Image 1 (cartoon, rainbow, N blue to C red):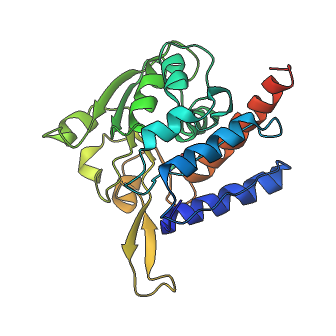
Image 2 (image 1 turned 60 degrees about the vertical axis):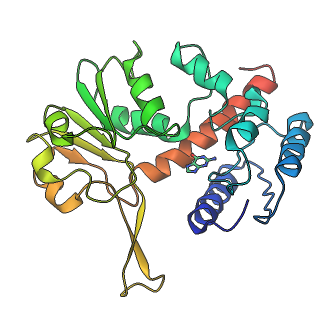
Length: 256
Ligand code: GUN
């Protein structure tokens, strides 16, 4: 809904990934003037449609629309973003649930890179409902992706470096460039950069370039591993969206 430029890019990438994986996707693009009632009606129509296994409402929504209300209207069994309070609650107590795509992608990125979080001190920087808080929560679960000791830092943390310097793994999800700099990480630490920030760059045709939340050049010299932006966490987010959608279709077919 609306003209957020980054949202258009994300949606385009999600549509392309669905096509590549053989998943049918239908885009319902609406102007920023769409009323909340009309958006809720669209979500309810998709809830009822047996041909639809997954519903994703790209955020942010225009300010006149109550995002929480829209999310709560999505059928939890089709909530492939894992944002519905039912899925958030289930995830939090370790029950089967759709797990939000970016946190889930970060955990698999680490696991498949041979980096276990078990017994490690993981410092998460950022407390969003989409990334920081679900990620911190998942990391505390007693399973093969979690079992970490977790510190959750945010804009109210006065001395961020005090905490990040004690981390085996730093996950930057604050939405601000240079939030994590080389002096803030331990030698050999792992840095996962979830940030996607547009900064002006006159040498680019688009007029901007993408940078993460960590100073990549500086942190690379000290870290044992670090994810790039773009190309690190972003593709994992989309992968986990496809994963959740396939899971949903399996469940709907009674093969969950
Ligand atoms: N906006 C930024 N990240 C996301 C996401 O993972 N899902 C949705 N629906 N909107 C987003």
